[in-house]
Image (tube, rainbow, N blue to C red; front, side, top):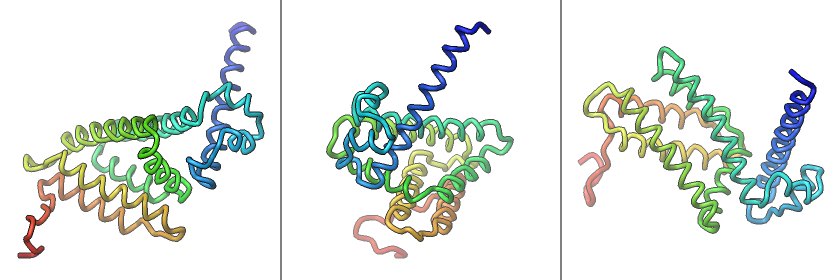
Length: 212
């Protein structure tokens, strides 16, 4: 490879590293101060850079959030590729979900909660969150349909039920520093197994007491 080509690769690597550094600083700011109260100047101070330097990589705070979402998406894609390569895709999916929620930090949960809140105030963030939700739903429904072991499995209803539990795990992790996600993960596992087998618990009819 020529010296000029090496120089281009080095420059791209430095740019990528600088973007990652800014995104790490943004995560720290957003967790500490909240997205709404954090400014680009705050991000610059956290990153040890001038505001002008920050704007070379991200044109706005919304662009930084989009960068964080893209990074999270890329990490998710790595996990999906891992699942697709596994001989037992069903076991791999549950293993990935377990790892994700058991290892999730409180900082990650706080950031996710703040992002959901900001989606109600900022149309750009709202559109991004809606896009991510749609993509996740499409992937999960398609995957659950492929993993179903009964014709009675309703992949859409199963994902809706799993989504409630998954969001609850994030919220509980954000609200409590000593939260133990293991029982919730076990509930998620049992729910997925029941749903794939066509035994998804049905909600009681309006006005009807549970168990009657």
